Image 1 (spheres, one colour):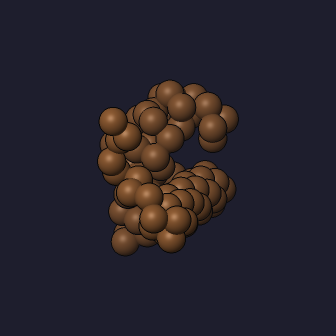
Image 2 (image 1 turned 30 degrees about the horizontal axis):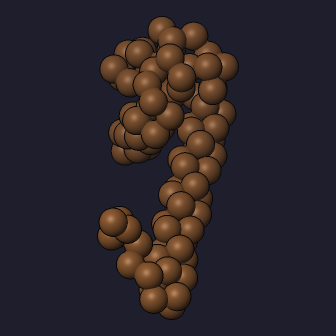
Length: 90
């Protein structure tokens, strides 16, 4: 029973990460009605779908890590050069 909730929460998080139910359905290659049924608990989420969802979330997490690394790396480079990245030249 606990797995059902974990699967549902992961699916809901993937929906947020990808931008909505339509995008998630496209990504998972399933009908939008399946996403709705799974999120509502009307139907169980198949294991193969859960694994695709986990893969999507891992990719999303890795993309965030890369963006943070780039942002912090750029900020560190700007500070080393003596410029202040938040100020606009006048």
